[in-house]
Length: 187
Image (cartoon, rainbow, N blue to C red; front, top):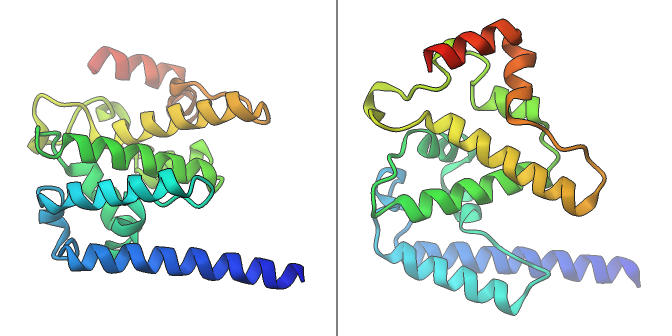
């Protein structure tokens, strides 16, 4: 009997995710990652996801699900690592950052995994500076890491199972105390 209950739950989740992806395709949100954040229909899709989540709090979906299933994890990370927070896209990049960070925490990604995934272990003293196309902003990859640390610590506080992590812990672990001091001096 338990087997059938688990099977039914799995089918429901699959069907729901499939329906959400089908809806995204009908809204033409699969037409390219470079244009999806400025597509006005993204607001409609986000409202659909929010309404679904309000009606089904135990089987939540995210806007991120559509992005990752349509474009892949690496492409979404690249998008969030390069997308400028202009007024028309800022709300969605912020939402996607939070959803991505939450998914990393939920799937057990460690601070080390996330730091490496975002290539922050290779930026050294330039960690606080943005790439040339982002003058006047912070490093977008660092923004993603900050979102991860925030979500990790919120989860640790709720569950009391994990020890909170500090933002500078990975900097010190990767670059040493002298390296962090130099980063702060240069940043």
